Amino acid sequence: MPERRPRVPGPTPPSTSAAAAAAASSSRNRLDQPLAKARRWVPHTTMDPESFGAFAERFARFMGTARFLVYMTAFVILWLLWNTVAPGPVRFDPYAFIFLTLMLSLQASYAAPLILLAQNRQADRDKVQMEQDRARNERTLADTEFLTREVAALRLALREVATRDFVRSELRTLLEDLEERAEERGRRQTLVERADPPTATRGDPAGS
Image (cartoon, rainbow, N blue to C red; front, side):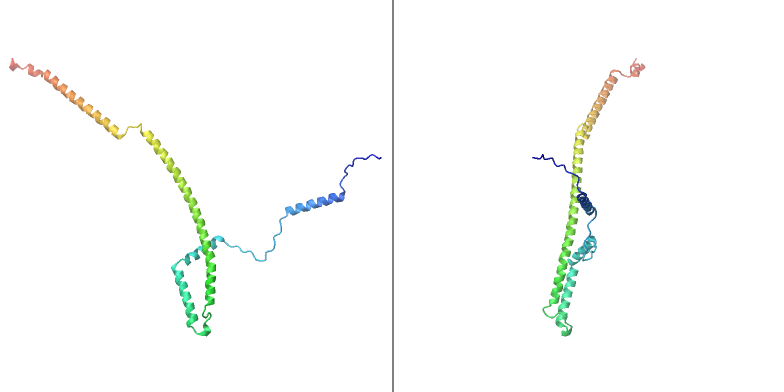
C-alpha cells in the first residue's frame, strides 16, 4: 500500500488573489466615497424658524384681541348681507353660504397650528425662565446660608466683647467711687483745718 504524504498548501493561484484584491479595493472605495444624494422631486426651501415663530406669535396675539373679533364680525355680516340683499346676478355665495363656511373652516385649520406653535414657543420661554429662576433661587439660598453662618460667627465673637450696658455700668461704678473718694478727701481736709487753726489766730497780740 503506497504511503500518503501530507498535503502542503501551495501559493494561491494568481487569478484568485487578484480577484480578492480587486474586491477589497472596491470595498475601500465604496467606504471612502460618500453616498450620492437622491434627487429631490420637491425643491428644498430654507425657512427661518425664529422669524416664522415670531409671526405665529403675532398672529395668535392678534387673534386674541377685541379688534380681531370686531373685524371678523363685520366681515361675516357684510358677507351675509351681500349674498342676501344684493341682486341675484352679483351674489357669489347664495343661501346656505357654503363658500363662507369653507373660508371659516380654512381659517380655523390654519389658526390652530399657529396658535399651537405660539404656545410651544411660550412654553419654551417659560422653561428657560424657570431654569433661570431656579438658579437664582439656589444662589440666593447659598448667599443666605453664608450670611447666616457669618452672623452666627459674629455673635460668638461678640460674646467676649464688652457691651454698651456693661461699659455704662462700669463707668457709673467708677464715677461713684471717685465721688466717694472726693467726699472722703473733703471731710479729711475739714478735720485737718479744724484740728490745726491758722497761725495768725494763735499769735494774736490782742489776746496776750
